[in-house]
Image (tube, rainbow, N blue to C red):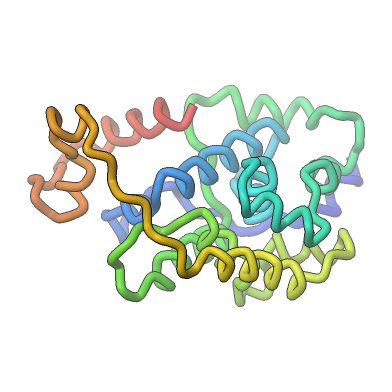
Length: 224
């Protein structure tokens, strides 16, 4: 099993932190949340013990959207990422790691560099008037200053120029600037329902106290 030593193991952080009870996911839009959930899924499939920034890039590279195409233009392919994360090349993760990751009905923790990137994406939204997009999250990963960033180590190992990849994503972002924003549809759902997520974001709901286990269980079910 020496081949697995080539993928560095980094510090992991719990999904909930006592120092920050308010999770920052409420600042992410649905595409960014989908990216995070796909990264969680890919990490589990590959037998990972934590969701690294490599898994975030892998998830971004399989979305079939603009950011996916930008990453591919920069030379990053999902197959190359999976091969890097699964260096044994047998198409399956080690059984002990697979069972360790999937036998428990719980979310994998985030690695330190993943949490730093996710928080950096939130911090980059200075105005706070809009939700964080998947593109902002990918930019935060590629522009992460952490010297032990797993995604950066992976790109170097694959021979991909990170600065060029970053420029591809930024260029794609600049091409969207100036476009008219989409008007929010006045659907039957918006007319006949109350957006509890928006009310929570605006601080109009009472805080949830003493329901940590219930909240954790809801998140486990939603990310499946």
